[in-house]
Image (cartoon, rainbow, N blue to C red; front, side, top):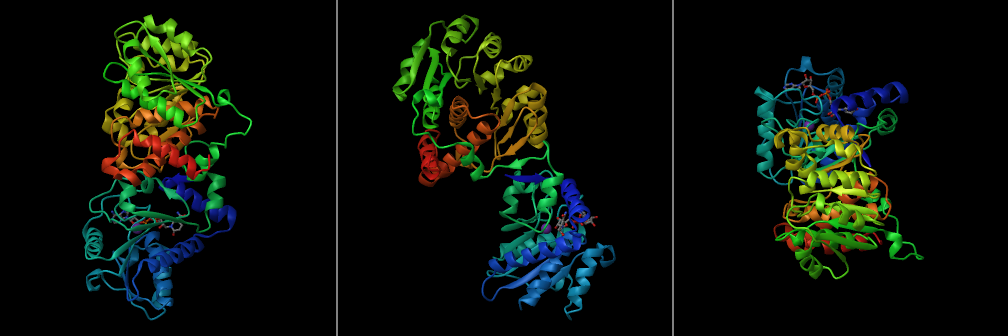
Amino acid sequence: MQWVLTAAQMREAEQAAESQHGMPSALLMENAGRALAEVARSLAGPQGRFHVVCGPGNNGGDGLVAARFLLEGGARLSVAVVGERGKMTAEAQRNLKALESAAFTAQSLEALPELGPGDVVVDALFGTGLSRAPAGPFAEAIQRMQRWRGAGARVVAADVPSGLQSDTGEPFSPCVEADVTVSFGLFKRGQILEPGASLCGEVRRVDIGLSLAAARSLTGPGVPRLVEEADARGALPPRRADSHKGTYGHVLGVAGSRGKSGAAALLARAALRSGAGLVSVATRAEVLEGVMAHAPEIMGIPLEASGPLGLADLEPLLAAAEGKDALVIGPGIPRGPETGQLIGELLTRVDADVVLDADALNAVASDLSVLRRAKRQVVLTPHPGEMARLTGLSTKEVQARRLEVARDFAMAHGVTLVLKGTRTLTVSADGELFINPTGNPGMATGGTGDVLSGICGAFLAQGFPVPDAIWAAVYTHGLAGDLAARRSGKVGLIAGDLLQGLCDVWTRWDR
Ligand SMILES: NC(=O)C1=CN([C@@H]2O[C@H](COP(=O)(O)OP(=O)(O)OC[C@H]3O[C@@H](n4cnc5c(N)ncnc54)[C@H](O)[C@@H]3O)[C@@H](O)[C@H]2O)[C@@H](O)CC1
Ligand SMILES: [K+]
């Protein structure tokens, strides 16, 4: 996993590197600029020219170091310094002098020639220190870089595309759109959260000498981490030779209703395709055959009452939950006035971990105190709209502060929370944050959430601990979507394709 930091945490890490590890910021800048030059060179055509656009802060300093290395390598190079020289940081000034001592002259932006295919722009205008919308010459510089890109030049951003707010991923206007962003030392939030992630293009993290210091100073919850493929694969050990279906747990899905039997079927099949030893589905009697028609491997439990799920279903569901290792409640359920109470009773009495999804989330939203009273682990998997109902915020507020909203909720109610959307977040009950990098817009289609709930249930039933089971489920779900989209395209992708995608994940991971 990789830490994902705020600008303030980056500054702390930089200070720790200097005070505790003898790595002065000049040395960090040297390493950063050198790595930046290497990436810039890798993007240029054989006759490519380089424009390095530098701002007044240390981001500009990185650009000036990169310019020095490009010059040493014999590149066709122009450098522009935007803003007043007197306002540059000491490190940036020192590197400008170093460049000028080689009889090289930085120019004004207007003097720089136009660029085209094969050429490279190094955007070193602003990094993590951007504090307000770029205006005047800074805005013009960003627009100029955008124009060069429009004409075919590649843009490599130093640390953060200029104009992007590195703590939120929200861009000011104007903002550089990069082809590659070279992230110095550690990831920044704005590189991972959308729309920042898209504005960064490909993010390449390079070590510059502060990761070790940061790792020591940034322990504890609160600092989000980016899940990597090795983490997810490692969280799911291979199946043992001497095992049987009982080894891999029994998932009970409480799902489906008239017209929504497919939700139960997707949940159940996803749980089966994610390694659960046994999967049962409890649903209204009249839809059970429809569910089972999709999956002969599952066992059906008819709920004989009628109408929305309510207290009349409590005894049959308690009986159904006997001996189960995980429950998944919600996809396609008929919700009514008693559904929340029913779920509350199940949470306090059932001896199994429970995943709440879809209408089960809406059902508990009116009385969240039941979450704290649960006998075992509770996992909630809301999309932003459901999260808004759970918190009383608007969807927009949820999206604007995803990390904080998710963490506050998980800690307040003692649950593992999955906040879905681009870069799905998993938060543990003690506030550890895991950002997921897999998945694609093709998965914005009905039923993919049902599949995720089934994967979560299967991993819990197999005894994987929270929160690992859940961030691994989220990663696996996204990767299944990415692999499935190779066949179907993003437009053609449907939730059922994720079931084959899951098999592709298992063969890829040798599981
Ligand atoms: N933190 C670290 O460990 C390291 C940071 N480095 C670089 O340092 C950068 C951060 O440097 P700084 O903190 O100096 O910040 P920046 O270089 O991002 O820019 C901040 C400067 O621009 C000014 N400014 C901010 N917004 C402006 C606006 N809209 N219009 C005009 N001026 C504006 C600020 O007053 C300040 O002078 C990082 O992104 C990275 O590139 C690297 O040199 C290596 C090590
Ligand atoms: K930049």
